[in-house]
Amino acid sequence: MRIVPTELPGVLIVEPEVHRDGRGFFLETFHEAKYRGGGMAGPFVQDNQSRSLKGTLRGLHLQLRRPQGKLVRVIAGEVFDVAVDVRRGSPTFGRWAGVTLSADDFRQCYVPPGFAHGFCVLSDSADVEYKCTELYDRDSEIAIAWDDPRLAVRWPVTAPILSDRDRAARPLEAFLDRLPAFTTTEL
Image (cartoon, rainbow, N blue to C red; front, side, top):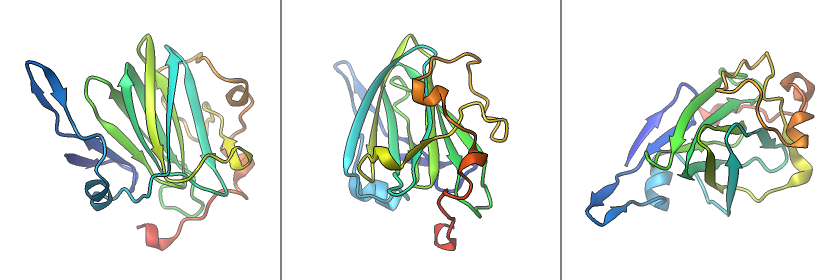
């Protein structure tokens, strides 16, 4: 397994070792000690899976009271996955990192607590699985506008398919007084 840092400290790309032969392939998709040693603190307490059609954009989401770290992987199709640093006082506040994840490359993206997360489907459809470090808490979840000009995420779509909640999402500016605070222990 190889762990590749992104331009945002804490947001990591995992490139697992894939063993292929005439029968197919085998890989470890999670190994607690290895992932913890690579900077992905757990414990992971909930696994989620979604299926979305081409052009669907889910995000940008985060939970305020129970911030979730997420370990994201694609098991069918391909997505453009995005993490945005929304921790007040962070040296990288408002910056984003994006990576293409696919079922063919087996890469994963770790999005730490305090970051908003979203993805856009590039293939005809995509199945995305992600492990979470906190349970889902709908009452503390916020949705930041995918097209917020302050963030300037370079999504691969201009007119995505959105949920009603994501269509009504507000810009980052609307949440500034409620966002998680950056701490020096996160350096």
